[in-house]
Length: 292
Image 1: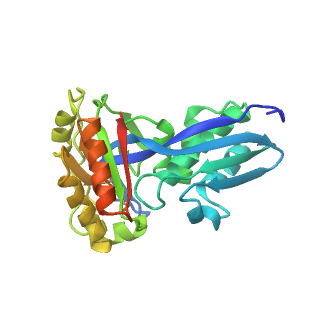
Image 2: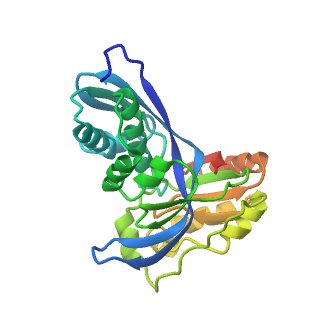
């Protein structure tokens, strides 16, 4: 257990991206079966865990207000679940610097929960098998296991079946959110049409961002049309990305309203982000490296 003088533990929380997302079926319990490729972007937020006799969470940053009214958000749920599982009586003072929009399809809450599990295992100096951490992660949400995994991966099931993906080439992203939250349940309810076959798998690593874009064009995000029917601004975001210089591919991520553009050069992504931010000052716009 940590002493009062134990050093704080810091975890960087990366935004999660669905580079492809196929809806392949629906289970009897109502959850949809998914299949696709997950990666991460080198942009996100920071979680700090410090020794404390009680458990607390302070949220700062531009998106702190969205969590201020939640007494049982994913970070606190993850902390309480781990403490109960491991029989830990110590607390922790958690501080989250919140920079990822909420309900945006970027896995912010799920990534925060995964970072909480990792940080508290280190702070409390406890030994929890990886399989047990994954079980806790899944009970917190379908995206939490892959965020705990932390690398590009092919996922299936409701997100709990995770397989390693080939190394992704050096690529750059522009992430855009129009500032409109979008609930996952609403998007699935609005989805129409038949289910899809699984997304493509490949063994060899794409040689370049161009090759990665060609691979991704074989697949899609099956929730994109449903999301656009609920938030028409998503179509405007995708148009802005596709018309930016150097964009190889533009697609919505997950079930939220965020979209990404894929670029081969850092300069192209930086210029595109600046152009879009000036044209649409109300949008959240970031450029970042693809973490593959």
